[in-house]
Structure formats: structure tokens, C-alpha cells
Amino acid sequence: MKSLRGAKRWAGLLVLVALGLAAGCRETPTGPSPAPAADAEGWESLFDPGAPGLGRWEVTRFGGQGDVRVEDGRIILGMGPADLTGITWTEDPLRMNYEVALEAMRVDGSDFFCGLTVPVRYSCVTLIVGGWGGSLVGLSSFNDMDASENETTRILSFANGRWYRIRMRITETKIEAWIDDEQVIDAEPGERKISVRSEVELSQPLGIAAWRTKAAIRNIRVRSLPQ
Image 1 (cartoon, one colour):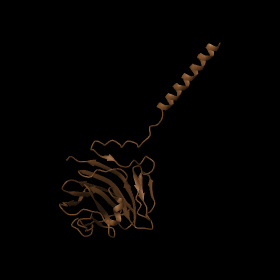
Image 2: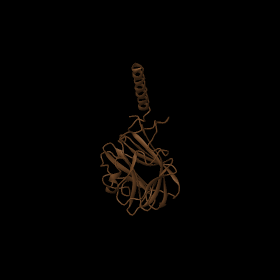
Image 3: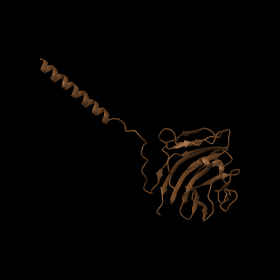
Image 4: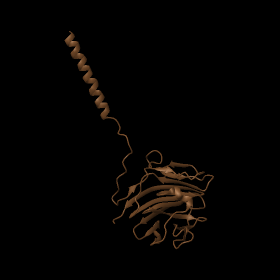
């Protein structure tokens, strides 16, 4: 009888061990989720509208920024008591020979609804869309001259409530940008100093901001270019 009870006890222990191992195999792995795969044209999405929260973005702590939330697959940059509201990428971005694209809308307000700050090797530059009263497009900054002062300055019309497709291309010799299908920036910085205005330093190295304006952002993506 003692031998039989001992055999039963060992059998029970083996069952418990097997169940524990099986449970361990079913545990969800920890750590960050892998980045989404690139599509057929090489574009990688930087924001998953189906995931909770901002994903790999964070609210830029400008101070006095408006509310930032995800709504209907869009990132909403609200107006706050201070001038700027934005988001900043939390991972190391591409810095040369790449394109970054997004869609942006000025929901309310009358100033820039997309200040897209991107890396240019070891520096950064900001593409302003709809600034200085609502119509200015340009790069800030070349030799400390902002988007209203250098040769990239353009005046375009932007309607509230409309989506605009914005794309930047950074290569060894050029900084280019398109709005919808129109090229609006074709600059060769050369040996000039490339920098950002002090107001958007916290957007570096990759960030999106709006100035005294409620904006919506969607379809943020990036792809590397052949060198």
C-alpha cells in the first residue's frame, strides 16, 4: 500500500510540473512590440491607429500645451494656454537618405498646423506648413534665418478642415518637400548652418507640432532611400 501511495504521489507531482511548464510556454513575451514591416514601396508606418495611445510617440512637454489624444485613427493636437502642442518620436530615427510623410489638417485656428522637425545627419530642421498667419511654407532654419526669412519661403493657401499630404526627402545634397503633388521645397543647404528655432527644440530629432492651432495628424510613415 505504501508503495502504491508513493507512486501516486510522484505521478501527481509530475502532472503539476507538466502543467507549470505548459503555462510558462503560454506566457506573453515581454518587451516592446516589433515595428511593422515595410510595404511594397518601402514605407514603414510610424503610428498604428488601432493600437492604444500614441504608440512610439509621446506628448512634447513644451509647457502649457493643449490636449493630445487619439480619435478616429487620428492624432489630435489641441490648443492650450501656451503656443505649441506636439508629439515627439521616442526611438532613434533615420538621419540621412530617407523620406518621411504624413497627412495633416488644420481643424481650427489660423497658424501652422504642421511643424515637422526632422533629422539632417547630426542637425535638425523644421518644415513649417501654414505659419505666420496661416499661409507661409518654409524651412527653419538656414544660418539662423527662419522660414519667413530664407529662400525656401513660399506663400500658399490652406483651408481649415481639409487634409494635406506632406512629404519630406532628406539626402546628402538636398532637403525637399511636397504638399499634395506639388514640390514646395528644393533646397541645397551646402555649408550653411542647419538648425531649428528655440521654440521647437523639444521636437528634435523627429516631431510634429502646431502653433496656436488645433491640428489632426494621420498616416505617419518613413522609408529609407538608396545611398
